[in-house]
Image 1 (cartoon, one colour):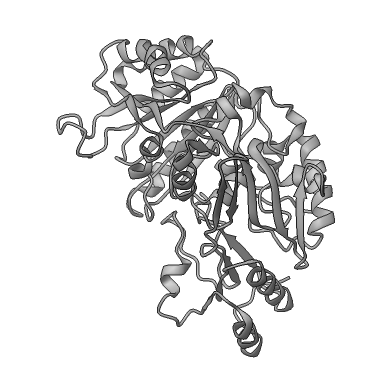
Image 2 (cartoon, helix red, strand yellow; image 1 turned 90 degrees about the vertical axis):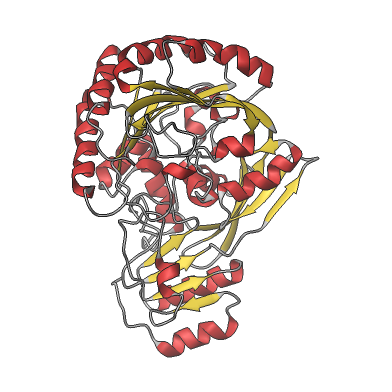
Length: 463
């Protein structure tokens, strides 16, 4: 297959005649709006955008792309760090209009279409005090998050997003609609739970729901970055035997210019521990008291609040259009050596929008059999998400270099890596994300469902 900007106009007209969604071409007024993705450092111009409203549109778009030999990108929420949800010259299959959500509160299940965002899903499920374990930014797409595994605020209690997945509908590279679950096409079901978009376009997801909220004890507590060595050692010991209901993310950054942040603190380097207790609020208050009382916090926003409010905590830090670059790794433990690296590079943060998130793993995530899903790294102690960000292109190169240097300094401690936090880093890094045995199994699955590697704009597993 070759990239091409020359698409047979008659073939597009034929598609248009039966297509329920919108077909957007480069000379259409809406083209620039629909080619944009979340990461503002990505600027790509597809030759055709097909905005699908259902399975029939998806199948028709795939048939056209195959017939025209088009490089094809697939977009759910458009939150891919490396911008793999858009391409130059080829076709963008945009699932954004597919917004269906159907909650069954009695069965505690929900069916979700591929264009749904996390905040939209939470809004429907929280009406019944239920939730799917998901991510931490509400405008992330459910589809991409799920297909890579899905880490977030309630995973230590209920497992990853994929651990609550009951079934999927997949349109394969040859345009066939396939259902996969534990009892039907079970090998494909194993692969989509962590293997990304390598095997087809998942149009519908069915999840198990779990009781969460509607109120939780949650939010960040901040200390000056100078206190980081003592805070991180306390934090390590405090979470060593914490209950599964507690999930924390330690964050390094400059204090943001938000209305709730005192002006004299804005721009100062800070360390925050953001927590969410997925259980009774009064239990959360008791469990979190030692954190809130340690040392001399400069801000404390950890309090009872609606789970929906807590899910929006990080939204202001990751808006659409900024320039994002991430390096990531898992580590086994928060050793003194790891803490030394964290302290050193935290003190070098310059951009007001650069940040590091150190995710606490374990709990239910680590108790599920490692071979049950394609997701790898269940035994990780912590996951680093090192963001070298800037609001525009100005200063972006230096932020990326800082992120690379931080990541390299952690290299002696790397174990695995979360596939959703990869940039375009090459086949060996993708193999590292899955481990050799799982990677070989995923390659065999790829040969079955996508032998020509039609779906290759992803963290690609080549057949």
